[in-house]
Image 1 (cartoon, helix red, strand yellow):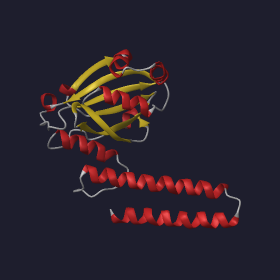
Image 2 (image 1 turned 30 degrees about the vertical axis):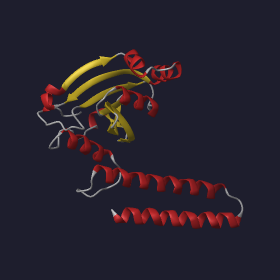
Image 3 (image 1 turned 120 degrees about the vertical axis):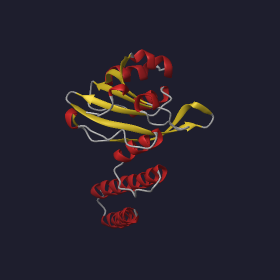
Image 4 (image 1 turned 90 degrees about the vertical axis):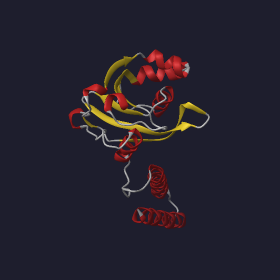
Length: 219
């Protein structure tokens, strides 16, 4: 599935109560863990020792966690809490029955505490059969570029090769926001009964679609 050197294999099951302790989970969060997650396996560790790829000041290791789910979706709140408990970027492989998907957060080191990361946003693949799930993880001059290349491969918008990860993420956010606004206007139009209001909504909708078209054409 993920073609990684055997040396990267860590393969340790992490009891959920370890996360409860680390994040000081309340009963509501514990209940979400119980209902949604069957088990968590720390599958791979990508580092200089396991892959002979140089770390950077920002990215010293990348972890790969396999999460076996009791349902086909996982609450973003749970992902964020797991991410906050581990002071390294994590590529999650979510598994449900014979399907799997990848998800990863763009995380930056906290300027006030180097052992903590600030989570910006998540990027993910579509669900697919486990045997068809693949991603080129090992490409990059150092662990920073490996991490950024993983994120780029999961971002839905096309970007220029020389764009920085920050530029690509900002572009993705703008596109996502415009698509959200378009969807909201389309929904309002479907439900609106008054002709005049419908015309006004349609004008707004066409303007937003034009904005999106221009945004995508500039890239």
